[in-house]
Amino acid sequence: MVSHSGLVTVMTRAARKAAPRLRRDFGEVEQLQVSRKGPADFVSMADERAERTVVEELRHARPDWSLHLEEGGTVEGNPAKPRWIVDPIDGTTNFLHGYPNYCISIALQQRGVITQAVIYDPVRNDLFTATKGAGAYLNDKRIRVRNADRINKALIGSGHGAEPRDLAEYLRMYEVVAPRCHGLRSSGSAALELANVAAGRVDGYFEKNLKIWDIAAGSLLVTEAGGIVGEFNGESEYLNKGDIIAAGPKVFAGMVALLKPFA
Image (cartoon, rainbow, N blue to C red; front, side):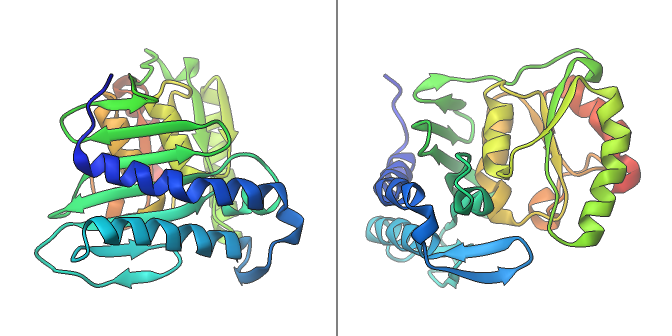
């Protein structure tokens, strides 16, 4: 049995507490009250309820720590203490269309570094966890990236934003990457796609213009599973800039070579 850190236990408890209501709401998705935030970017009552539940659990455990939330913005805490980064439903558009690919993502950031990560997939009951320096796990089993020796053997995940310019740029990237890899997929959840890289389900992932809550937990999973995470030019400011490539070492190098012109 894996012995998780106390903080991962707190994060796991928060995600699991929010999940049952999400499952019920997912089963009644047509009845959800939905308001529009922007093109293809919806916020639902389910999203807000899940975030409240996660926040209540985290604040109960560490009442003086700050939070950075997708829906609720910043909840101030002691600036000398770590902060939680929470996405209550990564894959909201999937969720609202009844497409079963979404997750709860929680990360802990200390002095600018992500040190703890939990991604919970309520559909498959998959729990991904990582602590910096202690490895990555799926349902308490150690996971490793799958490191294909060439990009033409790799299954690659990706995605794009809602703005027309995002789609136009993605199509240009697609034209570059798709003919040179074994397959290219878009699942609609950046956090889950990063978790899948860590678990060896896909060989790599790339996307631009993401937010920190989309990638904080997943990026730690990948690095703790032996992968590399960086920007399109290979640099390491992806948490701040939101442009990300994640893969095993050999595939990462191949992806950077293809995508560097889009940095």
